[in-house]
Length: 226
Image (cartoon, rainbow, N blue to C red):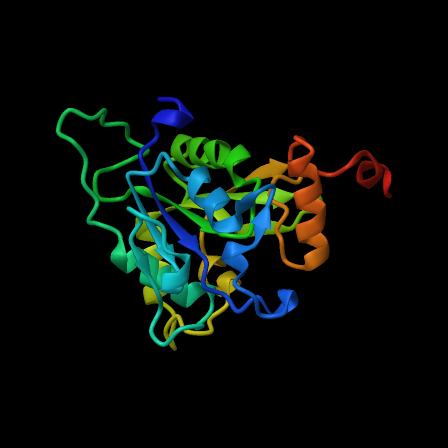
């Protein structure tokens, strides 16, 4: 089974306050002539089911949109709301029965909406998680060694168990606390496809590269920086 054939669901997180962008609706910020949320949805377009987590203003036709209650509870609270809104895991009776993927334990791609280059690495994350049945998922790791836990593919059971183990619930919990006990495969990101639009400088840099028809990754000058 190739990465294009790996069945998966997806939760796209688009409900943050975007304080470093001045509190604007980050999901609607345009990069390369396209809203960030639309880049994210395109990156997981092959999913069986997608849930978009954020305010109604970021909604898109045909994509269920939910928000944690109360709003702005952080990415973990958003993830919990998204997972709860995914349909029950099902598999067609004639689907291949590969051991790494079971009918009741699908892969779930978790994606923050501010990574316009995510489409370049989602297939690699799915392939890595699918190929290793003894792990809980696969995460992107930047060239500097930083793990990107909101650009990852997890087994549904692992996420459910990690969220259930939070003593004070998901609101304001750290993502690191959720994933600390998980066994994750590291997928390298040497070209910085996981670069996020966290500040206006990030937005302008990513917009310039996409508008120019280039891919999202470090410039030649960036590569020469020690």
